[in-house]
Length: 131
Image (cartoon, rainbow, N blue to C red; front, side, top):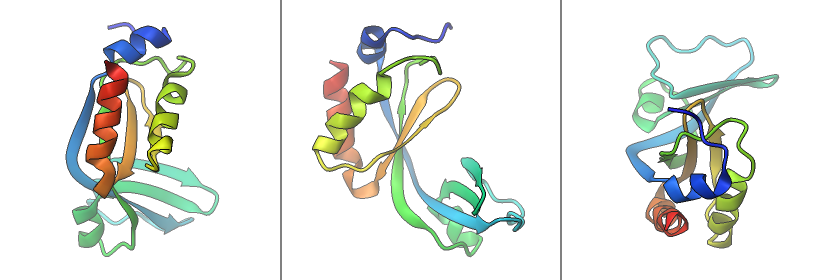
């Protein structure tokens, strides 16, 4: 399947899917090893340390401190990494509703991490945008 770049088609084809897992953000100091067997969804290295996005249960099992319990919403349309304006068309609607979002663009889809308590609200807004 070819990645989509047309904004109108991206919005019309977007099918948001709420992941049931509660994720959290944790950090490891620069140079610290990652706990063995950790099932992180995402890792991002910064100068100050490595950010991990992982299931809350995994963070607890590894004894990691964490913040931002959230749910992941997958925007199920194969958006191109070169698409212009897709998240810019969506994120202001969530912001207007007071929903903080941590977006991640991956190869096939865009992913939105929203506060656990606001996941249903975010889904309603995204479903409205897709109509």
